[in-house]
Length: 390
Image: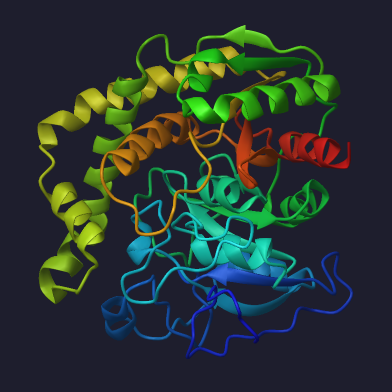
């Protein structure tokens, strides 16, 4: 297909018509190149992975469910190598264009899917989210992005990164489309009447870069006109760094457990940043994992108690608009630290989160997120559609 954004994987003509008459009939979609498609190789953003893995025998159930609902798959999209990055800059295949932030990164690792949706190449796209790989690209590219309750959508036929955190997610340009995809992908969930309480994490707002705050605060005020007043709360209670550290340790340990044997045997060529990240994962002291696990349990219990079944938590998706391409140094490191602190909350607790493209700064988009109670994904998607239509 015509791809002016560099969002799609070349060399694989993956096009499958959806079944006629389904609820998604007439819609087109793309799938991140970690989803198996029967008869095709899954590349996971790395040529050596592509080379050492045979064509898939079975299509991932999430993709198949969309095909059965009538949507047509038009291609596979670029990802960071083995999905282990938040930048979207692939050493081997390049950086997809961010259509809504010229000269800036799309964000990773679902970079191609976010780019394709933002640029209007498809109606919606599948990604995966382990540490923020749907939510952050959605924020960067100015589209809606959804990470479901962990385990709510089967991960079969999807290249893993850290199974204890991996989720299937998706992108759309409006909340109604996001909800339509959820109606197909979600196995079950509460579709009871809407939420009653809306919470605003003020300490999460403090993680946003200073020059972004006025635009973010205005977006929060605008959202309050739709939802009602927010109740200000503290999310981290001074433990944001502890939460982020626990997430990184648990994720990194799982990453090496998942891919260490293959990396040791194949010695794949990675881009410098990805190679460093895997080397770090290999070096994690196993003795740190139990304490990190206890932190995760405490975060889960805290957020479950905070949200109950009737509350939604509002936080920034990202600390900043999309960063310029090829950035390094202190600004990139500060962004990464703040982004992980924001993104780790739903990841640690396994909760659903939607990123809404409600903020603009310097002509670039920035996401505002809502985190919902466990298994209330359908209700959160309905709220997103309501906000989108307002």
